[in-house]
Length: 240
Image 1: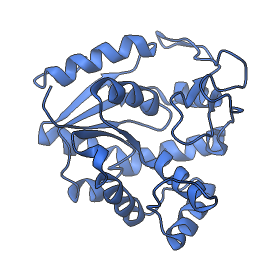
Image 2 (image 1 turned 90 degrees about the vertical axis):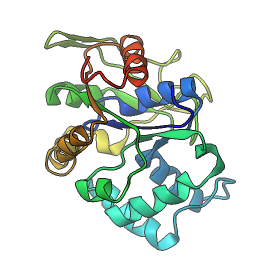
Image 3 (image 1 turned 135 degrees about the vertical axis):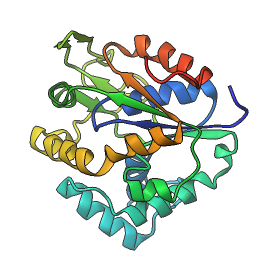
Protein backbone atom coordinates (compact mmCIF):
# COMPACT_ATOMS: atom_id res chain seq x y z
CA UNK A 1 0.00 0.00 0.00
CA UNK A 2 1.48 3.43 -0.93
CA UNK A 3 2.47 5.84 1.87
CA UNK A 4 -0.27 8.16 0.65
CA UNK A 5 -3.48 6.66 -0.74
CA UNK A 6 -6.08 8.92 -2.34
CA UNK A 7 -9.12 6.81 -3.22
CA UNK A 8 -12.56 7.51 -4.62
CA UNK A 9 -15.66 5.30 -4.60
CA UNK A 10 -17.79 5.89 -7.69
CA UNK A 11 -21.28 4.50 -8.02
CA UNK A 12 -24.99 5.37 -8.06
CA UNK A 13 -26.73 6.75 -4.97
CA UNK A 14 -27.70 3.94 -2.62
CA UNK A 15 -25.12 1.42 -3.83
CA UNK A 16 -23.48 1.47 -0.40
CA UNK A 17 -20.53 3.78 -0.90
CA UNK A 18 -20.64 5.25 2.61
CA UNK A 19 -20.75 1.86 4.35
CA UNK A 20 -17.86 0.40 2.36
CA UNK A 21 -15.85 3.62 2.36
CA UNK A 22 -16.02 3.96 6.13
CA UNK A 23 -14.69 0.46 6.72
CA UNK A 24 -11.90 0.73 4.15
CA UNK A 25 -10.82 4.16 5.40
CA UNK A 26 -10.68 3.01 9.03
CA UNK A 27 -8.57 0.01 8.01
CA UNK A 28 -6.07 2.18 6.16
CA UNK A 29 -6.08 4.97 8.73
CA UNK A 30 -7.26 7.79 6.46
CA UNK A 31 -10.42 9.92 6.69
CA UNK A 32 -13.57 8.95 4.81
CA UNK A 33 -14.95 12.14 3.29
CA UNK A 34 -18.50 11.94 2.00
CA UNK A 35 -19.47 15.21 0.35
CA UNK A 36 -23.12 14.56 1.24
CA UNK A 37 -22.33 13.99 4.92
CA UNK A 38 -19.90 16.91 4.89
CA UNK A 39 -22.58 19.24 3.52
CA UNK A 40 -25.17 18.05 6.04
CA UNK A 41 -22.79 18.32 9.01
CA UNK A 42 -21.66 21.79 7.96
CA UNK A 43 -25.23 23.06 7.73
CA UNK A 44 -26.00 21.59 11.15
CA UNK A 45 -22.88 23.23 12.60
CA UNK A 46 -24.06 26.62 11.36
CA UNK A 47 -27.43 26.04 13.06
CA UNK A 48 -25.91 25.23 16.46
CA UNK A 49 -23.02 25.98 18.78
CA UNK A 50 -21.11 22.98 17.43
CA UNK A 51 -17.34 22.77 17.92
CA UNK A 52 -16.97 21.50 14.34
CA UNK A 53 -14.69 23.46 12.00
CA UNK A 54 -16.91 25.75 9.91
CA UNK A 55 -16.13 25.28 6.21
CA UNK A 56 -19.43 26.39 4.67
CA UNK A 57 -20.36 30.09 4.49
CA UNK A 58 -23.92 31.16 5.40
CA UNK A 59 -24.71 32.17 1.82
CA UNK A 60 -23.46 28.80 0.58
CA UNK A 61 -25.60 27.06 3.19
CA UNK A 62 -28.75 28.71 1.85
CA UNK A 63 -28.08 27.41 -1.66
CA UNK A 64 -27.18 23.93 -0.39
CA UNK A 65 -30.40 23.65 1.64
CA UNK A 66 -32.53 24.69 -1.34
CA UNK A 67 -31.03 22.18 -3.76
CA UNK A 68 -30.91 19.25 -1.32
CA UNK A 69 -34.58 19.69 -0.41
CA UNK A 70 -35.53 19.52 -4.11
CA UNK A 71 -33.47 16.36 -4.73
CA UNK A 72 -31.15 18.20 -7.14
CA UNK A 73 -27.35 18.22 -7.04
CA UNK A 74 -25.63 20.94 -5.03
CA UNK A 75 -23.89 23.43 -7.38
CA UNK A 76 -20.50 22.16 -8.46
CA UNK A 77 -18.61 25.28 -7.45
CA UNK A 78 -19.89 25.08 -3.85
CA UNK A 79 -18.98 21.40 -3.50
CA UNK A 80 -15.53 21.98 -5.00
CA UNK A 81 -14.75 24.88 -2.66
CA UNK A 82 -16.00 22.99 0.40
CA UNK A 83 -14.00 19.86 -0.41
CA UNK A 84 -10.78 21.75 -1.03
CA UNK A 85 -11.16 23.43 2.38
CA UNK A 86 -11.69 20.00 3.96
CA UNK A 87 -8.64 18.42 2.26
CA UNK A 88 -6.43 21.17 3.68
CA UNK A 89 -7.01 19.87 7.22
CA UNK A 90 -4.21 17.94 8.92
CA UNK A 91 -5.87 14.52 8.94
CA UNK A 92 -5.65 14.32 5.13
CA UNK A 93 -1.84 14.37 4.97
CA UNK A 94 -1.61 10.56 4.54
CA UNK A 95 -4.49 10.45 2.08
CA UNK A 96 -8.26 10.23 2.03
CA UNK A 97 -11.18 8.24 0.68
CA UNK A 98 -13.73 10.32 -1.23
CA UNK A 99 -17.40 9.41 -1.54
CA UNK A 100 -19.51 11.65 -3.77
CA UNK A 101 -16.81 13.75 -5.44
CA UNK A 102 -15.94 14.28 -8.23
CA UNK A 103 -19.55 13.95 -9.41
CA UNK A 104 -19.22 15.44 -12.90
CA UNK A 105 -16.62 15.44 -15.68
CA UNK A 106 -16.14 19.16 -15.08
CA UNK A 107 -15.23 18.54 -11.44
CA UNK A 108 -12.96 15.62 -12.34
CA UNK A 109 -10.97 17.62 -14.87
CA UNK A 110 -10.17 20.25 -12.25
CA UNK A 111 -9.35 17.73 -9.51
CA UNK A 112 -6.25 15.60 -9.98
CA UNK A 113 -5.89 14.26 -6.42
CA UNK A 114 -6.74 10.56 -6.96
CA UNK A 115 -4.68 7.37 -7.09
CA UNK A 116 -7.49 4.81 -7.45
CA UNK A 117 -11.21 4.80 -8.33
CA UNK A 118 -13.43 1.85 -7.34
CA UNK A 119 -16.50 1.78 -9.60
CA UNK A 120 -19.40 0.09 -7.76
CA UNK A 121 -22.08 -1.49 -9.99
CA UNK A 122 -25.64 -2.37 -8.96
CA UNK A 123 -29.16 -2.88 -10.45
CA UNK A 124 -31.37 0.26 -10.13
CA UNK A 125 -34.37 -1.66 -8.73
CA UNK A 126 -32.22 -3.14 -5.97
CA UNK A 127 -30.93 0.33 -5.10
CA UNK A 128 -34.49 1.63 -4.77
CA UNK A 129 -35.42 -1.28 -2.50
CA UNK A 130 -32.27 -0.89 -0.40
CA UNK A 131 -32.78 2.83 0.14
CA UNK A 132 -36.35 2.19 1.21
CA UNK A 133 -34.92 0.24 4.15
CA UNK A 134 -32.01 2.52 4.98
CA UNK A 135 -31.88 4.13 8.41
CA UNK A 136 -29.18 6.58 9.47
CA UNK A 137 -27.84 8.01 12.70
CA UNK A 138 -28.28 11.82 12.74
CA UNK A 139 -25.22 12.37 14.98
CA UNK A 140 -22.33 13.88 12.93
CA UNK A 141 -19.18 11.75 13.03
CA UNK A 142 -20.88 8.70 14.57
CA UNK A 143 -18.80 5.54 14.10
CA UNK A 144 -21.83 3.48 12.97
CA UNK A 145 -24.02 5.89 10.98
CA UNK A 146 -25.71 3.50 8.51
CA UNK A 147 -28.16 0.61 8.95
CA UNK A 148 -30.63 -1.24 6.73
CA UNK A 149 -33.74 -3.22 7.66
CA UNK A 150 -34.51 -4.98 4.35
CA UNK A 151 -33.16 -8.26 2.99
CA UNK A 152 -32.55 -8.05 -0.77
CA UNK A 153 -32.50 -11.46 -2.46
CA UNK A 154 -32.98 -11.42 -6.24
CA UNK A 155 -31.01 -11.06 -9.51
CA UNK A 156 -28.71 -13.67 -7.99
CA UNK A 157 -27.80 -11.16 -5.29
CA UNK A 158 -28.08 -11.81 -1.56
CA UNK A 159 -27.80 -8.75 0.69
CA UNK A 160 -28.77 -9.46 4.30
CA UNK A 161 -30.12 -6.58 6.39
CA UNK A 162 -27.81 -4.60 8.67
CA UNK A 163 -30.19 -3.73 11.51
CA UNK A 164 -29.27 -2.01 14.76
CA UNK A 165 -29.07 -4.13 17.90
CA UNK A 166 -32.10 -2.29 19.28
CA UNK A 167 -34.73 -1.42 16.63
CA UNK A 168 -34.66 2.28 15.73
CA UNK A 169 -31.62 3.06 17.91
CA UNK A 170 -27.97 3.67 16.93
CA UNK A 171 -25.63 1.01 18.33
CA UNK A 172 -22.92 3.54 19.17
CA UNK A 173 -24.46 6.80 20.41
CA UNK A 174 -28.02 5.56 21.08
CA UNK A 175 -29.58 8.34 18.98
CA UNK A 176 -32.92 7.67 17.33
CA UNK A 177 -32.36 6.50 13.74
CA UNK A 178 -34.08 8.38 10.94
CA UNK A 179 -35.04 7.80 7.33
CA UNK A 180 -33.57 10.44 5.06
CA UNK A 181 -36.15 12.44 3.05
CA UNK A 182 -34.17 11.83 -0.14
CA UNK A 183 -34.60 8.04 0.29
CA UNK A 184 -38.21 8.38 -0.89
CA UNK A 185 -38.66 6.23 -4.04
CA UNK A 186 -39.60 9.14 -6.33
CA UNK A 187 -36.58 11.14 -5.18
CA UNK A 188 -34.30 8.12 -5.58
CA UNK A 189 -35.44 7.64 -9.19
CA UNK A 190 -34.65 11.29 -9.89
CA UNK A 191 -31.22 10.92 -8.31
CA UNK A 192 -30.50 7.82 -10.42
CA UNK A 193 -31.44 9.74 -13.57
CA UNK A 194 -29.08 12.55 -12.58
CA UNK A 195 -26.34 9.99 -11.96
CA UNK A 196 -26.81 8.48 -15.42
CA UNK A 197 -26.56 11.86 -17.14
CA UNK A 198 -23.98 13.68 -15.02
CA UNK A 199 -21.81 11.15 -13.18
CA UNK A 200 -21.66 7.98 -15.28
CA UNK A 201 -19.44 9.70 -17.91
CA UNK A 202 -16.73 9.73 -15.21
CA UNK A 203 -16.35 5.98 -15.66
CA UNK A 204 -14.78 6.29 -19.09
CA UNK A 205 -12.73 9.31 -18.04
CA UNK A 206 -11.09 7.44 -15.16
CA UNK A 207 -10.84 4.23 -17.18
CA UNK A 208 -8.84 6.16 -19.77
CA UNK A 209 -6.57 7.44 -17.01
CA UNK A 210 -5.90 3.85 -15.95
CA UNK A 211 -7.03 4.22 -12.33
CA UNK A 212 -10.58 2.78 -12.47
CA UNK A 213 -11.59 -0.73 -11.37
CA UNK A 214 -15.12 -2.17 -11.84
CA UNK A 215 -16.63 -3.84 -8.77
CA UNK A 216 -19.95 -5.75 -8.87
CA UNK A 217 -21.70 -5.34 -5.50
CA UNK A 218 -23.40 -8.72 -5.14
CA UNK A 219 -23.38 -9.60 -1.47
CA UNK A 220 -22.82 -8.57 2.11
CA UNK A 221 -20.21 -6.03 3.20
CA UNK A 222 -17.86 -8.67 4.65
CA UNK A 223 -17.64 -10.29 1.18
CA UNK A 224 -16.88 -7.04 -0.63
CA UNK A 225 -14.23 -5.54 1.66
CA UNK A 226 -11.53 -8.25 1.06
CA UNK A 227 -12.02 -7.82 -2.69
CA UNK A 228 -11.50 -4.07 -2.36
CA UNK A 229 -8.30 -4.64 -0.38
CA UNK A 230 -7.07 -7.01 -3.08
CA UNK A 231 -7.66 -4.36 -5.75
CA UNK A 232 -5.93 -1.60 -3.80
CA UNK A 233 -2.89 -3.82 -3.38
CA UNK A 234 -2.89 -4.93 -7.04
CA UNK A 235 -3.38 -1.92 -9.30
CA UNK A 236 -3.02 -4.02 -12.48
CA UNK A 237 -6.42 -5.68 -11.94
CA UNK A 238 -9.42 -4.21 -13.80
CA UNK A 239 -12.40 -6.14 -12.37
CA UNK A 240 -13.52 -8.55 -9.65
